[in-house]
Length: 366
Image 1 (cartoon, rainbow, N blue to C red):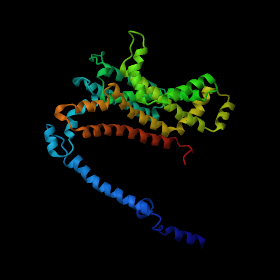
Image 2: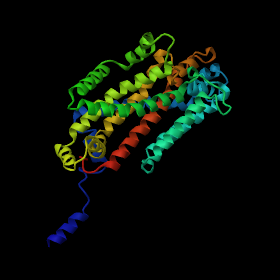
Image 3: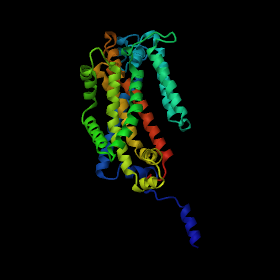
Image 4: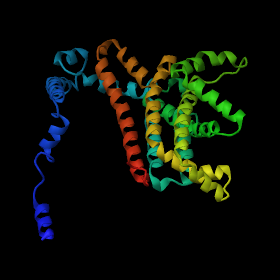
């Protein structure tokens, strides 16, 4: 009898107030007078904004206008400005006839990054892929070999430069940050003190200060006749800045590992570096994937700060495109374009980190 009652109960639909679209709306949007008021206000704002935005961005927009006057006459977004200036925005002042080189370098760099995210390439061959990829990028960007015209890095700009700064920044800052995290937890007072001083000092100043120091102050301390390229100085500042934040994030992961893991590693007779490499660090890094990816996303966006020392990143390239007297007044379109580029890369990193968390989930999920 109990079985028949249970079967009939299982066939009954769930209560209307506990499931379904209306129940979700009632629980999330209309659960109290305050929530009802906020929902109504937000719905009104959305209904007011979306039609105007669609009209400006699509209905009245101009894509094939010959000049700025035609764009303004249309009354909407001037996407013709992006069509006209996209090569300047994407590649900066790189020689016009040679812009296929930074385009190819960008595709190679993106391909190498994508391959690095695939588990099938997580072996020693990945180092070969990175080496070949970076050599190809350097040859394409600098030239001077294989019949390519030499181009100094002062003329690099736009998306390739942003990707180079972000990729090298993450690639070098990550191992340095891991070593700093291990050093801060070291039992050797001198090493621990140096790591603490470095981390707290770097985290105590904004990236803009480091970029200014690398551009203005550092050359004053170099021997006479010796100089470091401005782009390299900016890259070093970005690496040092990111490494300090990565160190604190990794240290948090190391502290989250149960003491029994360390004791178990000791019982196996493993050396310190074997313990870190095979047992402790893999678990710690898995725990801190979300904050690490947040640092990588912030670093990718912070590369735009190099504009203050005159490096032609995406932001400065867009500003240069807006300086054309024939196409002035379309800053909204220009900055929406580069914002879309930043969003695509940052969103891709965010989605990959979520997929990686799910793939490596082994009982820590809540």
